[in-house]
Image (cartoon, rainbow, N blue to C red; front, side, top):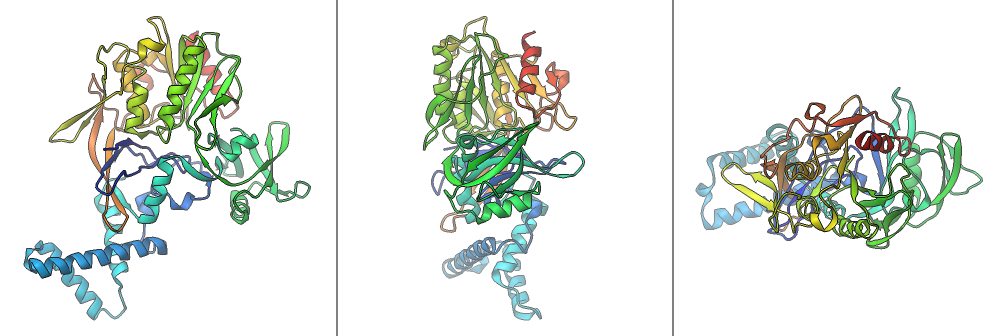
Length: 487
């Protein structure tokens, strides 16, 4: 069984689930949140994401979704016929028989035509909107296909997340994040850049700060077609050559005082020098950023830890800012490096409480002593988008003594100093034949030893964590956090 922890990132495009086989049920922790700032992901398949807020689903949803619903309706009709044929209609629940009578009466007597897809579409929307919580909803087959690709890290586009308005509501295209191994990263685009122009010819760029115009321009570009963007950071302005393409996203970045590494290649598995060193570190401290528990993140993390050991490092700064979660099995692999006080070969790293039963999830090993010693410091950077699997990993680290609340520094976001606070699990049930699925909240997640649940709360200043002010300027937040943590 593949299970996952997920959180919908404010940086649209975030994390999504993937089913293994038709009979497999996937579990995840997912968050839904919007900020005052509009943040969008510049990806080809943005509109296909399954993690849409259920309140946005209406009876006038996309034609594709309606076609899927129609397919479900047909499947239901076939199933109803089969049940009637073999067991008789009376075997159905009274409510279902009544629903069928309502549908038949409406379609036979109502003065306007009501199709199967419209009837069932309204029912599905009502279930999403009025019955289930914010983390449970119906997923169309098209969306589920996009979910599967996202779970593998497969993407299409240029790979940037942008803020489209400033604090005063003025239009801007501010690069809030650049996805690993993306065309944007390769082209040299960095977080903190402003996109201020674009065009197919370098000497005739359109100057604009309106995202919809930039998005329309991107929609006209073919995959692998080069174009140009003008970016600005402070007084520095430059023109970059870039193209939309298919790529596999990388999720782990390694930085030391004098060198930096990142993952590249067709499958994002080649650890090579790249990126900026982090000058504020000392010679025995490394910085690892983990953006999602997704794709090949576990393999990347393993390779990065080997680099950590080969470089003779002793202390670690683990950056989980903006990390909304991902697959549970990846979290279990990564948590194996941080179970300091456990003697077990495979310590428990999370517990799911399903109400009638509890299930323990174990690390895939116990490697702490292979990489750290008793005097090692492991510090964590977080923010209000650090959620689900990230919070679960932090809980594991705290429970097993690998880190302490005083070793955590939270970046302020919109006046808020906390982690997200997501401690419930969703299970995805794929439907046979139709290709769609249903995601339902099924369990509460607690930390492995303390049984602490952060749902609805998160990690807060009163727990004893440190904090730094919000800043999108290069490494300002990181530098200030490290100065506080190691002072």
